[in-house]
Length: 461
Ligand code: PLI
Image 1 (tube, rainbow, N blue to C red):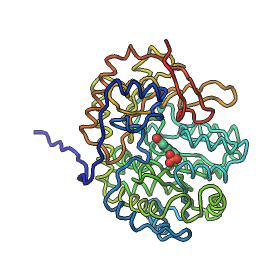
Image 2: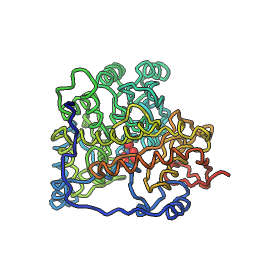
Image 3: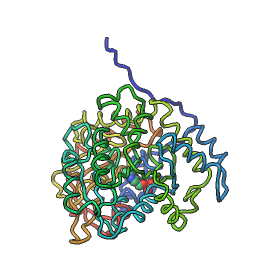
Image 4: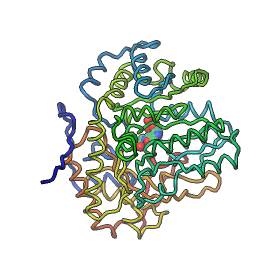
């Protein structure tokens, strides 16, 4: 007899939100009206929404109760102080600069630290992070290990920084031109792939020898902590909460989109250790986000956030079930013979569109076309993470051609059941059967910045 035991969700469902299946005809019309861009679909036209895990979590009864207790004082809100305490306890940063969401924190951080001509290394780009670095006059340089660009590589820590690449950036530009390195946990664009504690410790040592700050993108740091516990020697006996605090201990600050790990629908922060840096951040905050004791969030948002943050580390059961569900879906899709980024990551299953629709050249946007085909099949909404997301080189005007051309099926936290995952996997398999019929796309509208959000397309031929 096997001693295998299944994981199960550590909660039961108290309130439900109806969703509705539409007809194929309806979805074909909705897809055309949205210009083959799932960001432009109305959610009423979506059956199972795997666009993003951002702001889509289900809150707990304790968080909902917190909404009623939010202190809406303009200045010095009690809920702000609850949030300060929670960030100190869970992440270990003393200085809290609240923002409306992650990109608000990225904006403030980039403005206070980057001067025109600076270089900002990072372990793969994220769209909004890179935008704010460039907007401040900096240039992003990718220093992630090569394995991260290979969807088939099963390296356990594909989010690791390549120390030789980082050293080469320092040698080429000089430490004086590098205000900080941006280290992302559970690297989103690589497929939700973690970095190891040993790697982060080494990055910290190298950067501090050169007086370069280490700034964490802590958006999915909890998910990263889970992979460290599961895969890195010496961490099996530690809780994810302990591991999370150790991750942060090797950094000088963090930007956070609380819409992911922290289990809320809106919110974020910039956290710092240096009070002088925090003072400069707060000076800008009042112009762009709000007063330094709310920064774009309402009192009730901050209350729910403080509670969500503590809840995510209260036991390891939450993260076990969260990542367990992502891996369940990934397993079903792989079992159907469909290539995905390996190993399955923390927040999403990333289908390798380059492998699924090899008849489409990258400038016909294979992942965009495959995402639209899955939507038309079943009303399952995913997201393109390939050449459209990568945008254009600001100097040459050519597309960036990333090695990863992916469809992301992102799982909201505590929202869907295993039965929903079965339906998604069946739809992906059905589309895979008809993959030769999927046509390439061309732009009918291409926005100049962050084009993937609002671009529209039509089929070629
Ligand atoms: O969406 P924001 O502004 O709260 O956060 C921006 C942001 C920063 N870093 C990382 C790693 C993200 O994943 C991120 C937002 N991600 C979104 C919206 C997503 O769908 O993945």
